[in-house]
Image (cartoon, rainbow, N blue to C red; front, side):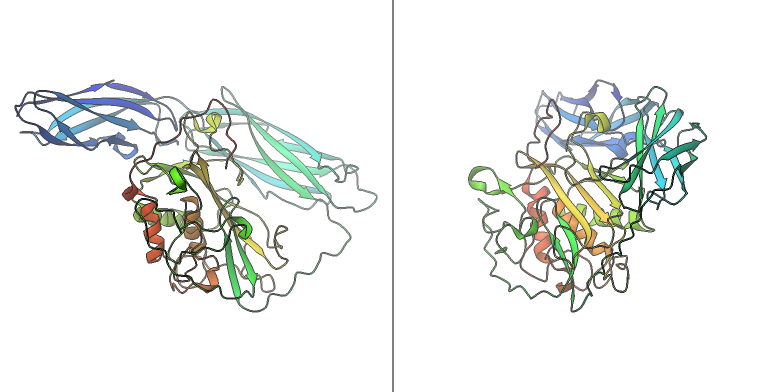
Length: 505
């Protein structure tokens, strides 16, 4: 059997968070059709894939496959040429087509301000950390401004200084500066409100980046007493738009319902779950539900394209000890349940917002934005949009375009407690009971398209404290739903990139 293989182009240019492609052509001079297997090898194999991985080469003809390269960000991938090979097996002897990926220079700054919040007295000191996660040296000036929020204490004058005023940071290294906020005048009365200050990092040859701090002005008014937490603790995770994971007291058991038989022609029928704040009627399916569906007759659940990797980034500025490892463990479990390759694309300083745009070319390049996962200090006070005894512990949301999931966001509350009276935090890990691992898995289920079923034996059941699953793991119904959102359901067409910003749905 005579086979030959060639690449076009052989040298592939690529930038951070950008997809680049090359075409592999396999030609046969044999008299019969041949099936060959294709595999990417070399240093670029960890962030590239080939479609299809099995190729049927007609007798005396040529067949082609596409190699997609998606280099990760970070200082570990310096500018320059990275070799790769495509191994073709199935003939008399393996073939190898060789090429290179040319990595362009890029800038990636991550900034953290600690503490991010402080009470104004005579002054406040903060530490700014600037980490260079790009592959080029960063030389930057540091500027600062301060202002009062609308309705805030305008009579309090502040000055903000940064020392040193400029920094030089090697790739993979970090630099620190001290930010000092001083009050120039004491207010005549303590009236509450907030001051905001911004530190602007202006690197040479790259866009400026800003990190914001807030300084609440204390008030004479006594803080309202939090209502006592009594009865059974129930974690309510509200699915749909602006999903929220919350802790509340009491609550009645929700009766289960019979499971509609799955319909291959209309998999979403009878399996649509609840939306935010219970605006949709209670779920009828006990095993699994989907957040949304479309297509002909509204039969097909919204999902990611499982035939290409789904990437995510972490904003780990406020990550608790072990938090990043828990997220990665939860991601691995979702990947195993769906059959989707979920790729760690590094870190991001994008601010967490449930209403984030799924397309941010200035930050992530010409592609749909990766899923954003991170932690915020949302406090342990009552959720203003819910009952007085509700504590937000997390929020997750898929971002949908034309009934296809293209991105998502998961925001976790570092201040979450089991109840305000004791101040006891949620236990970490994936063990028994209500844990941070259980919350992360549940919210990732929402990000990948699952809603709330009516069966308590599923991890996606709304009230976590009523789960009958002892460990933090997906139930049988959860896994069935994830399979229908994953590789077993086949490829979907990803919507084309828009010419401008996208309003998330």
